[in-house]
Image 1: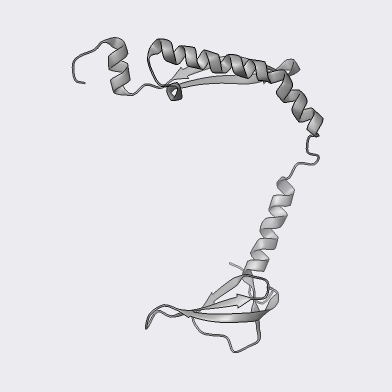
Image 2 (image 1 turned 180 degrees about the vertical axis):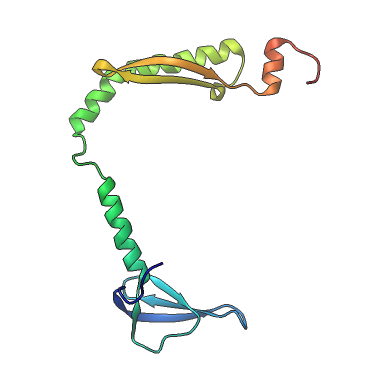
Length: 144
């Protein structure tokens, strides 16, 4: 919860009344663009904006999460140029395996990692089968 005494005071642009009898709320549109919802319409020209405080706090958190130095365009293209052939090979492996098993490509997950020298290497493959596809592959006729 935000302390309204420490929140910045903003001018009220407009007040909209919403709700039915006994459940009325007043939406105060402020100069900063935020909306404060209250049970009574304010008679003061300015009210505290709690959303400005929340936005500032979240902004600090987001700035702390940003990269110190984003990669340059050349670094990004170098990575994609060197891994595009491996990605095509992985896509072909996935399609071939799905075709051989007789399942949709969405059921095949090829897990790969970037190892030394930016080489993409397949570590393992997961195949997820629904019951009907598994029964079809196993040629199993009985109900389970």
